[in-house]
Length: 319
Image 1: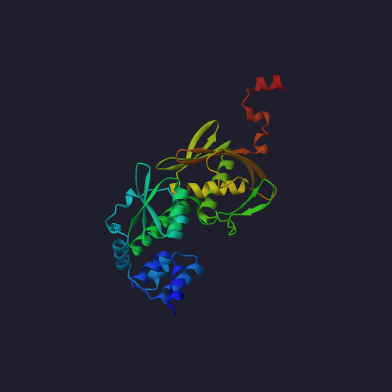
Image 2: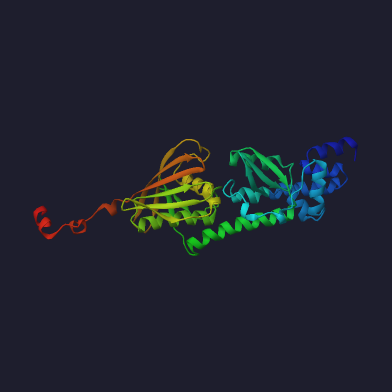
């Protein structure tokens, strides 16, 4: 293979693959195969690299630390209770194998196994909306931590909703949206089912509205019942962006716009002949978007005089 041809091929490889081939730590043909496999499966190159056993995670971490003059952190000694929750969602962590592990001032520290993955770092920075700094760690330890954190969040939601919960939501045009709709990029089954369960529970509790409220260290859902806001649930903070996006999709709002308030509507089918309307309002806050869902159930307003609490003599006067 001519030198120019080799250089052209190497130039089109991911940065990590180029660094390894230039350092003679990976054969060019193998780098090309792994890069194609990563592209076809839409996984990070570093994931395919480690899975192929072409290089051990620890050796890779030391190579990157030496090549790019980056300190190497041992995740096994890290206190997982200090993890930063809610900064980026589980889908992004899984896709790029990156994990927020600390924050100082306005800067977010991200554990990465491939500091050359600029696409992943850019997406993390865009979602977090703060400056970020990558911290180099070993891939296998990072992948295990990402799986543990994302699975625990999913299990926590699952325990709130049960296993057999399912029904239909409509947007304001009347089009049906299934809770398992794989076509929507913001669909995540536990989050979708949790949202739907909250809506049904609010209707059954005769609530007038629901409040989805993000805070720095927790996320809560409150129902307004008889004029009083009552806390109903505290789902994992990590779901806040996914839940917000799901509500926006159903309500025909702009999911990319997070800095200005938005208003929309959606419908919920709770039976063969009953559809309930909701008015949706979003409000940007310091820790994410607060969502208020107003229940517009006309049937709940149809009260007989017996339900108004009048004494017998007062009812006679009114009748």
